[in-house]
Image 1 (cartoon, rainbow over the protein chains, first blue to last red):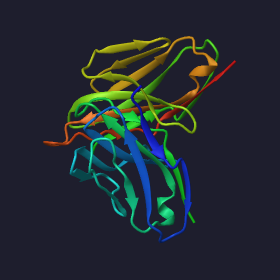
Image 2 (image 1 turned 90 degrees about the vertical axis):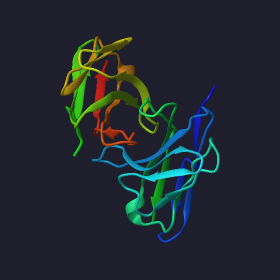
Image 3 (image 1 turned 135 degrees about the vertical axis):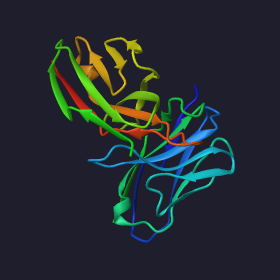
Length: 112
Length: 113
């Protein structure tokens, strides 16, 4: 069955370190998204991609970057981790623009 | 600014006690409205998409409806396994090439045996 996976599931890092969160989908979807989820907030969009070599900034993109070198993967990089980036991160993909998005299991990131 | 408000924030029901969750939205135009279920420690799970006022979708004990300003998720005779956080998201008309979803903060549903 097609799926979307994220790794690691849990990560603890120190302030100032570079961190990369992996997202891999086997749906063969062109569209991929990264969100963060915090108490008191809904899911907030960080970055998104509509295809290979395409990346776009979302609502809360400062301090994050993504790259899309193939259809299956969209890694999220925190250039210099800050305590404010402690959160749960979800990756999602969709078949068509504007269609439902399918989410991964999430990565819980703690920045100390 | 596009806004999505879900109410109530939390809801406790006895098993078998039917109720509704509300999602009200303020957007310039609506391309689609999505309902998701999220269990603790897991990613959101897609439930329904609604595209136009008057549309209804059903799945087991859940029925989603849509008007021009809000959507309801009706839960009929809920069971403890329906306990979860239910998220609403809208896909607004926000300019050419924009396909981003705006999510509400969710309603946490607890169904007590």
